[in-house]
Image (cartoon, rainbow, N blue to C red; front, side, top):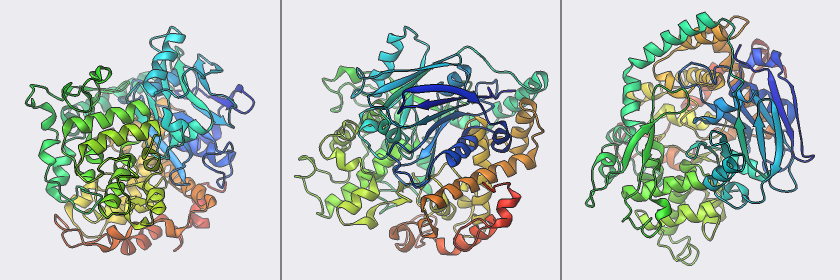
Length: 608
């Protein structure tokens, strides 16, 4: 079976590491990845603990299908209490680190306490050690990655690291692996920094095995064949997610200038076609697509910046190929801040990767700061002399680097939208739910998305539910609560397998059940997987309730609830959250206050 059945426990306060058997009862109830890590988090910490204090627990986990022949089997998750929200945080990443962690022998890394001095964790084939990281503390992710691999003379070692932003507690700092893949949302990198843990390096050769290898490979071939022929795969391979920008522009749901507008006049300059066109210097932005471990989709983008662009002119260290624009980065550095300079957007993406920050939260926070600037609430004196008006490519370039290095006004931007807007007396301008910034979809134009933002356990998120089909079909609220519940549970299950969310555009429960059942003992059918996803979602909710979140946190800002959307598919509408929340709770089997009922907990075996 593809559980390694091993857990690595890292006590940073005592500087000790130890291995222990995986709790197999929990593994059978929660599958792996997101679900299993959440169960360990729930059991091992007080949800009231300070997210940036030593009592928070930080967990890295892969899923049972991770590192296998299943397509997209390179995913891993980081689960903790998030400093951006005070809620459960589950951040998912691709690349190769997740599979390497599995091959090094571990399903989970459970990290507690706080080291007195900077350290990094090195794991190799069931062995682990904590080593000094003083030489790379204060350095970028890219520098740390290179330094660790050179120190161990192991070029194939996979490294997950934080930058200065994580060290200094930027609320949306992330963990970057393989140089430009990231556990990007909810501030998991800030938790890692608070523990004085700079990086985790993994190298392994232990491999995996399956419960029924012949049947497993037959199911893999069948599922991969379906995936290979799908239009969803072909579109992602050709355009990545970037093509969504055109869709949202046409739909009238493209958040622009801090969600004041829903279409962007400069969209054509930064869309998926623009990256393949030569500029006036003969430079083309996009080089090629890229794939994570075991991936047959290849949605990643590799790009470079015109050396003549002001962001990198006379800075040859950035005349390189690195992660290019996807939809969320294009939205976060483009429409939401009113900027249509393609190379400036790409440079900001480089800064997110090099310094370890969530591009969505950074971009939406910068957008809030720009609105505050245009309202006269903050001034040039406070912004280090930079004109912070919407549309300023200079502001994007300068502030992305300042925030990554925790310098000047970048310290304020590192607070995230909610704390920034509270600091300057305009909390209503923060486009967040539970303190986490919205992604590139307006919740007035897309009712299901608005409901998903409000009810997401980790704060506003477009990846923990999937109501796109329902939202595109009709602007009203009918059916949105049911679709939100159904897809939240589905994605919770997929996040626990070790596979990528982008397979869900082709595969359904039956496909995952066939692979999981051949991989693991115990009998995994569709009903069991459905219940597993629902159990995970409810456990996350229980954690949040114990952390102090209430019904009042399942909400959206006044702009989304009260200001009519100015154009597009739902012109004149607002997010009708009050009409959807009661139905959502009812379908979930929760009380009017959003508390799971005793019957629901019993049904899900959640008397924890």
